Amino acid sequence: MNHATEVFQPLQGDDPPVVAGYRLAARLGAGGMGRVYLSHTQGGRPVAIKVVRPELADDPGFRRRFGREVEAARRVRGAYTAELIDADADGTPPWAATLYVPGPSLTEAVARRGPLPVPAVLWLVAGVAEALQAVHAAGIVHRDLKPSNVLLAADGPRVIDFGISLAADFTSHTATGAAVGTPHFMAPEQASAGEVTAATDVFALGQTAAFAALGRPLYGEGSAIGVLYRIVHDRPDLSVLPEQLRPLFARCLAADPKDRADLAEIVDWCRQRLGADADAGAGPAVWRDVTGPEPTVPSPPPAPTRVLPQPPTVTQPWPPPAAGSAERPGRRRRTALITAAAVTAGVMALGGLLWAVQDAGNKFRDWVAGAPSTPGPDTSGRSADPSTATPSAPGPAADAEGRTPQASESSPTAAGTPRPIGRVLQRLDAKSSLSFEEPFQRDDREGDIRFDCENTGCALESDTSVFVQMFTDEGVSLDECRLILAHADRRRWPLASVPVGGQICVRHASGDIALLTVQTKSTALPELAALTMDMTIWRRSAT
Image 1 (cartoon, rainbow, N blue to C red):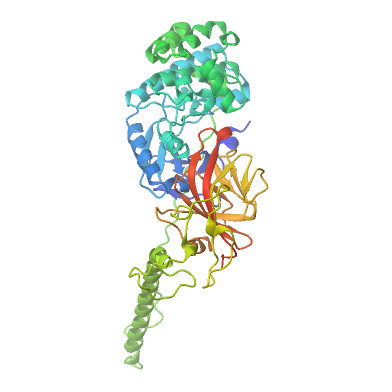
Image 2 (tube, rainbow, N blue to C red):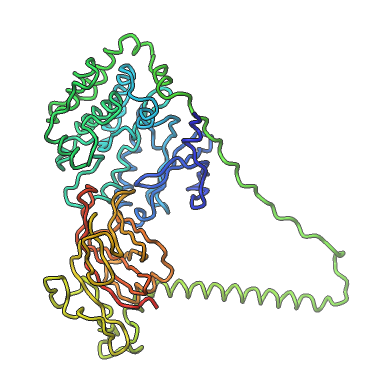
């Protein structure tokens, strides 16, 4: 089996060749937070570069949390952790670099070879417990310890993603009191949105070790809701575990956090069972049997070749012949003036373009389609045309079906601007959808806009429409949606960076434009995830 082929994937067209001076050699994987690449330090040490997804990077709240978690993770020093060596929470995009661990995750190792033997489980528990000691000493609770966050190197396990992934989790899970973590490996207090402490990581350590010993999650498979219910209400069946390990699991998986073993006690318990092997350093031999041969890490990509400018070729003696000498300086001066004028014009055009883009929001609020170009009695010049109304704007009360009185028909205004059709508190979940035609809210998945949480995070998706999120706290007008949608092509929009109150412009293939304003958002548990949104539609308004 060629591990290098499995682990190291070639860079794709949308992958950057360099991140903050780190030249990328291969793609290692992707997750909810972003993509991970292989790179190297200046001295040739392999590192893993995690690059944050654009929609998270656009969220100021995420950047603040990411920065705090990075600063905390810098303090973690341990033999069984993948050390954070570099990061920039303010970068474009934000990124973090950790030492690269040449080995599979515990998930991959179990999938390839099945459950681990008892000595390997003991070495695993001792190493991960030491890693958690280092993490806790830095004031961090991991919160998401699981088999995929434990890498198996030739000399022992390494714990990754301590703290940093928490920033993304809080961005994605916006419901008040929502639990953060992976359901199959949560502790009872975490599953019920209670207080999370160092003992929470001990419970996750017991579950992770049980997975290694069984080859499957201790609390079974199935929906996240069912697993969480069993974690909170049922005692784990320890009879399925190797008998010599049951006392350890009983202490780690106690329902009450106060009854769980502490990490120093766990390390000591494992070393006693390993006996002479622990003192003789027999761990690496165990890991070689579990992980197989170490993959060959690709070399750093070659530095780009620097092309030095070549001196001009002299085609005539110097000084030039006298004939025509009076004409050449004038021609050179004219050429220089023409070049300078062209550069100046280009700079002015670019400046005008930047000013136009920056001023577009204000202009379009004051100059809507069909409105007069000069202000009326209102000195602000802001149009009162109803086409600029948003779902969140104050207005007449909606009826029982969510319709506003002004939205009963879509007849044009006197100036030719389409009248908005408004619907409030339209619900989207795994079984419903929204349509641009009546009925707007559907109890099936046949509408134009659907809500999906089955892939990498929750998102809006459509076969007929494109989306663009508006990053503003003010109401969005029809003309602003027109402008931002002019070149849009994304039919799936992740919701991780869309807060309550966030606004999304949508363009249907028919030319209809809609504005969605998020009123409630609950995405902590995919099976129960749902949105409610206000929806405004302008008919045939794309041009």
